[in-house]
Length: 95
Image (cartoon, rainbow, N blue to C red; front, side, top):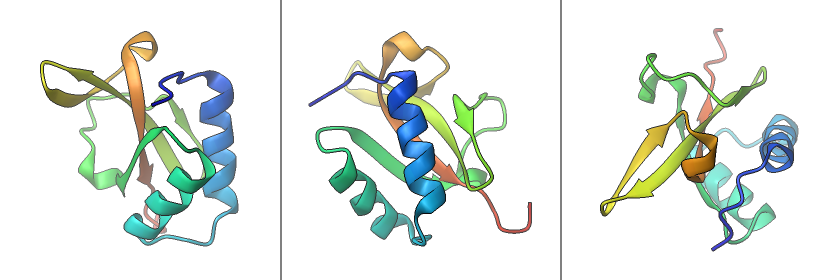
């Protein structure tokens, strides 16, 4: 699995999500995994992420958070160097 979570990768995901018409979480996850094979990508609502965490990147459609793997568990992190994947948190249309 490709774990290089670089600024270029994050920007490419932001662009892909902004250009996508897909807002169904599962369908968007499949679209992103197809566009970026070998990457760990999850999709959820912005309401599913703790407000204590700062997003790695944002646009008008989503917020991106880093995911780290350790001790058999996945966790959100602010540490880009520890990131092994991302969570794309779709923003509410009401924002």
